[in-house]
Image (cartoon, rainbow, N blue to C red; front, side):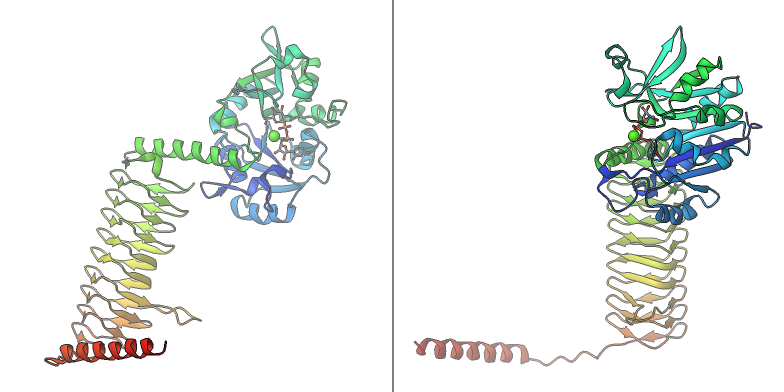
Length: 458
Ligand code: UD1
Ligand code: CA
């Protein structure tokens, strides 16, 4: 099959009014990636070398988004929404380049798996002109029904055009189909619009092909993989299914998830074997975790690299650019942004490390803050190997702490500290015997006098 060329035409011109959103429907995200991008990925995984994206509603926004998630895709604008066959024909120029297979897909069916598409393509390789992907939804209302005669698919009837008997059919059109490239245009051009909705239905090519004596077949996909998204409840349902699949995959690949239903992955999360993820952890986009790491409960991680045997959290926040090297530790209520935490360094409690390097083996005390921002620009803090930053210190960037540098707790460090030096950046403590008691008495009598004066006013 691999030698057969394949174009995927993805329909995404619809408005998606039921999303009640300013954003085009297919740009709503699942696992941090627009749903239409999931569709593109599935098409590519099924062997489509080229992608034609049919857009209409929100075309500019769609083009901008597509440039990011599918820069190689060609976009075609369908000006008027006259039906799914009309939409496919918007990509006539691409189809007429002459592919062996044309895969028609919907941009709002994000869970479609490459397997189902590949199965449909295999049918074309075996000689079919059209291979429709069917499924059996719990409630078929609203879907096109697959009409079979003597085991052959002869038509797809939209719900509105179905007879009572046809409405009882449970095998439905998932929407996607594979069409032999050499027949695609003549079949699509033959579609008319004499139906209940007055639209050019893609599904009519089944009846047309079958009348021409061409081979038309139906394949079956799971209900989940054919789930179409029309509103935000269905979006959440798709997200839940996606997460469930991903968690399962992670566990089978050797990752321990103690409470899998509470861990959220992004479309691109990479996580190594023997890593343990405790409950309630969120992985935003762009995270790579190596093997043998521990991600403790309630950590929020995005755009970060966590090397092997690191310890993160509980309640850690790793923001974009956080780069933890082997055996680094970032503990509770710590935030790390755009910073390298080198091998074995410890950032254990209540700390902000931003725009910085923390050298190997350094120890960052509780409450340390890198003051990286003056309201206009960001500045870098460089902390050397084996440095010790005493608790509650502020390192005012740009500043360098040399290797083995030692910062007294409570310091505000504004000047760089050489290797192995000790720096104090705070006032020296003064202790006055008896002064505490004297102050307490003075304050007590002042308060009593004030209360008495207030009483005599009445
Ligand atoms: C379609 C199928 C139906 C199937 C169902 C599965 C047809 C005629 N019907 O019905 O058999 O059971 O999907 O979900 O194909 N679109 C355009 N331009 C248009 C019309 C549609 O781009 O002019 C896009 C929409 O944005 C959407 C997709 O095509 O992504 C499907 O269109 P929609 O109107 O939702 O079709 P259904 O009525 O759901
Ligand atoms: Ca639909």
